[in-house]
Amino acid sequence: MTQIPELLCEVRGQVGCITLNRPKALNALSLEMVRGLLAQLLAWRDDPQVLAVVVRGSNKEGPFGHFCAGGDIRFLYQAVHSGNPQVEDFFTEEYTLNHLIFSYPKPYIAFMDGVVMGGGMGISQGASLRIVTERSKLAMPETLIGLFPDVGGGYFLARCPGHVGEWLGLTGESLGATEAIAFGLADAYLPAAAQVALWEALGTQSFADGAAVQAFIKAATQAQGPDAVRDTSAIDRVFALGSVQAIIDTLEANTDRDIDSDWAHSTAQALRKRSPLLLHVVLEQIRRARTMGMADDLRMERDLVRHCFFLRPGASETMEGIRALAIDKDQTPRWNPARIEEVSEAAWRAFFVSPWPAHSHPLAQLRD
Figure 1 (cartoon, rainbow, N blue to C red):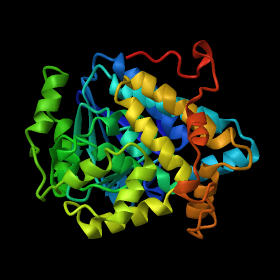
Figure 2 (cartoon, one colour):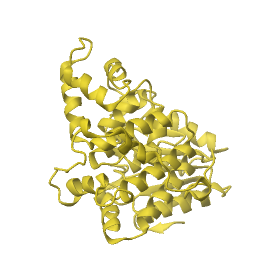
Figure 3 (cartoon, helix red, strand yellow):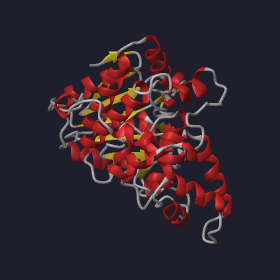
Figure 4 (cartoon, helix red, strand yellow):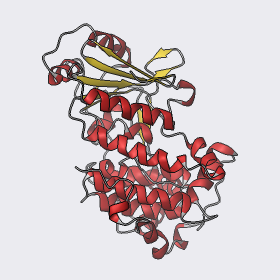
């Protein structure tokens, strides 16, 4: 079994059980956790005694709570500043883990309680059953820190209905359980209070195969959440436009009678706070990903990470975003360029030029 304090793994009955155990950091993924998850999933993949895998987060009071708030951005910031090469290892190994989950041959079931953001989405979106509760809060908020929705975000956001994916990726908007299911980012609803009993029951049942494990869990859930789903017609109309400039112009002009003025205003305000350069990158990322498999999407995202952290010396939007949000906490990032209107096409297109020849790419081995 994988034994590190931040990751609790055990076989209970015929089920491999994983608990992310870093509650003070909302179970944000460290490099050690990524490596532990990858090693454990590979071991259980080849273990005939393990029919399925379940994963959950923990909180300070015990099991369940926040699933995973993302990757450890403070580690990434410090690693880049100190020249620690493990920042490169983190992304290569994290994306390898994401791909393994998407292609896992056994049921992998995620209990997505509480906050599920960034890297937390990466270790849950590939699950064969994604369970949300009334406490779930799903988001890909990376543009807030001058990054893009990685960990396969291009792939799974591109597969949301209509242009919901572009809206989520650009704004970082969060979703509750009902909308997560409606938009294809979750599969089933379970009241938070019912999680412990269901988890404990897994260790006492006898199952014929992995499908029976998943069926047992799914039978305890509901197909829909308890709340209403917003009308996405305005989202589809605005976020189908051909450029970030067209999107912001339409929102700020607010001349379309079919678009709610309050929504247009708040959405425009949100976009104006994000990295202008990365907004352009994200729009292109999601649209390219619509025609990509998961492996190609992750290779594209690995290219984008290298550009974000290392290929704009002294001008990393991501380092500036992390500084403002998590290091100095002044909440005032100095974006460069400062405005959406100032971003050149050449600047954002440069992010899509791979730093590696195909045969030497760090994720060259991934196959769909």
